Length: 454
Image (tube, rainbow, N blue to C red; front, top):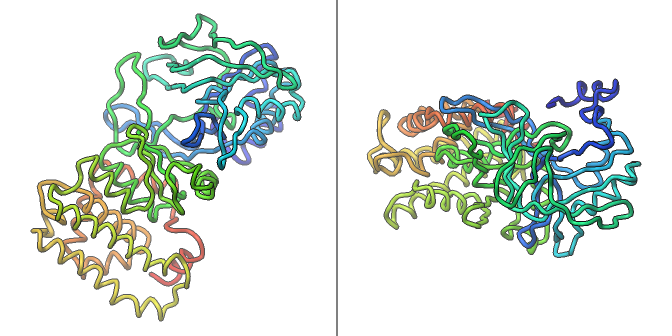
């Protein structure tokens, strides 16, 4: 069930809630991601991605698009009630990482998510429900090689603790399916009711902007390697998306509320102390970074997209910072002023000068209209991806800037088109249009840009 808005309201109104057919003695597995802080494994909120789609990229299905919808313990019971779950229901199991573990928020100890959820459900009339939170990390994925609707699970830790009415702890128990118990490591298939948070089945854990080979039978779909925390718009975050997409990486993104919550948290509760997005977490390396140029440099180094020499790396970082400066100037330093026709006319020579900086940089390293890369070398790197993203995105939203680039920096314009014609970048562009529409940077400054820069 993936409907929203009016259709969902009508379905609920006429008794078509996702959970309306669930019996009191059934078990609901609430399949979801969880969000926790770096200082504890306990879940603060849970949520799944909405709007993602499976697409056949030529090498098997790939999940593209979608953003996370997150739920606090005071929000989830209302959604469950609207989906028609009867009030004498007994067995709810949030199947997500750390739902049974203590958490921290802004440096303060917080009870486990499952324990906090129980009184919220009681307040909605679910007085007898037992909520089971799991003590550890859990992995879930859909396989293309099993019947639709069959959930294939692999668990790192499966011991659960149920909180009964009045939050009395029931005995620790091991999760069971209708066939056999889930053990510490082996995989099993769990049947019963599976509900994605928001009462729609989760669409998969990752955004993947390039196709990945289909997994072998009985294999587990790989989890995302990165978390990208940025507003749901292109602008500064698009540079990071482009590098990840070009390198064939998978990543998760979160809705604006989640980004705001993390941004406003005290530094001690943040993965890396930061003021504003983008912020990237490399899950495998345990590294968190903020500031677009720093993230671009890190990804360039770790994904083999940077020049080999120290001088080349420094020059690449200079190009990344130049791109950052260009979008800051185009948005008048974050909207401190608005564009007027007079201000735009006065700025155009400066923008043309920026373009000539790119053109001369490329010329010194052998860039031509039909071949070459910004800093030379045999293949595209971070500087070429940044160049293509900067000028290509501006051309998409403000064609007059694209026409100026063709005149002032023809080799740079051609390079941007070549890089953006790569399959991974074409796919990213399609996903971007689906997710963000015509949005570029948001706010009053975008409205001002669209009125004047045309």
